[in-house]
Image 1 (spheres, helix red, strand yellow):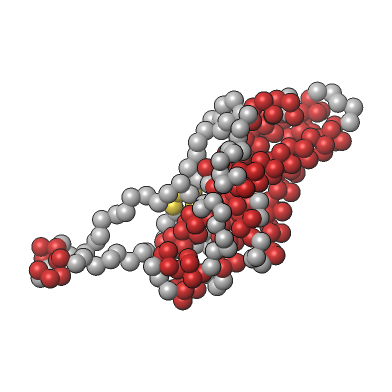
Image 2 (cartoon, helix red, strand yellow):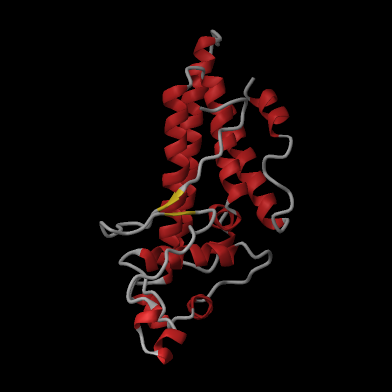
Length: 247
């Protein structure tokens, strides 16, 4: 259930695009504790082997998730330059060739992050629309969801506002533009509902104007968050702003 303008904290599930059926879903807020290694017990091995346990190999699909989480973590570093596949491979302690066994290109890795952003945010937006009958309340909570998602996932925020995509394939920037177009479209529908309920003589015009203003608020606050080195949180004084724009 959501309350005030702040939705309950939901652990978004990090699922790669087109995952194998047995792939593991990891949280964007950090991987779960490692499972104990399966296999022979140390006291069943010769002394030299027991002293150096073998590294557990990830199950199918887990490595893809690990790559994406590591990429997102590297994007959280304030002022981080363009991330190369060499740097990503070094962080994971694997070869670049190992990365390309799971992703055809770095652009595909970023597409995996964008898939996660879209699925997480619009999954919550759909819940808001289904559960909240008030159009104005829907709009306020949609804005809060997008900003809180960015606040809790700083690396994803750099993808959302395009900072991390400057030197990448142009289709990635186009996808993030479409993301905000979808946010604005849903806000427009919610605000049209609110305008109708208030008896506005021009509900469509009113909804379009307010949806545009709220979307600009979302984008601007996420950009400020990323460019301040994640110091200026996007939800700062949010309730006050929303009561003025979507009363």
